[in-house]
Length: 273
Image (tube, rainbow, N blue to C red; front, side, top):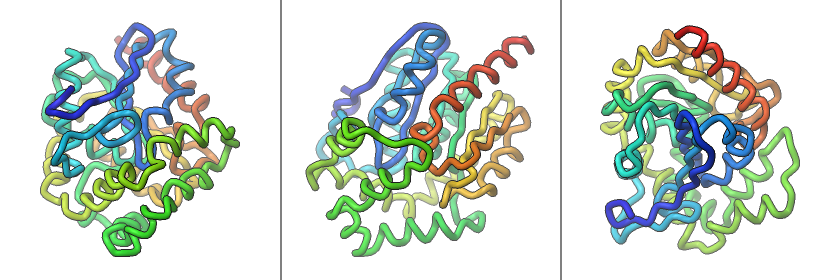
């Protein structure tokens, strides 16, 4: 229990800590194949944000980026995690990078996939901004009410076919309309989070010396190459991997390629010591 929220998490394997922060409209389930491939060499930890997956939000939890970042910070403190390598994907980027920028001493490295870490108004990202604006309109409510966002996610998996069991696992936590409200609220909060996102951006220089693995799909319809390029400018010790023919949800579409990239990158870091 963290600040009144019941936070579910997976903790598998032993070794250096790998902490995974998931996307929307998903939950920690998206990392299952990666964790299976990495748990022999790493302690793999993946939590569900309050209101997502198997976690329950406290009464009055509004589901802003800042609130979720505060929960992740409390989670890291509760488990006494240090020397953390954190993978952030999608909305996990501004959530997790906000945590790391405020307590860089707890982090060893970063894996950044298909995400951002700054106010969107600072740069020109028309596709993402358009999506966020739509979610803030009455049509955004229709998208959530009809579960169109989750259905679009399932249809958008480009490189592998999901089994019926996997599809059911993604749908399960969000089967009821009330359980989909956190998705909508978190999505809508992005357009009102310039102050928080400015704090995230201000914290990035504190992470400049960390090794960073950047992973982006070249068929991502929203996070185009400019996002990766921006991170490359911020982090001088970054190594970039572009997944060919892969869309936005890279942990689901290309878990084997990502885990292979992580292993190779990790080995190179050990050789530099």
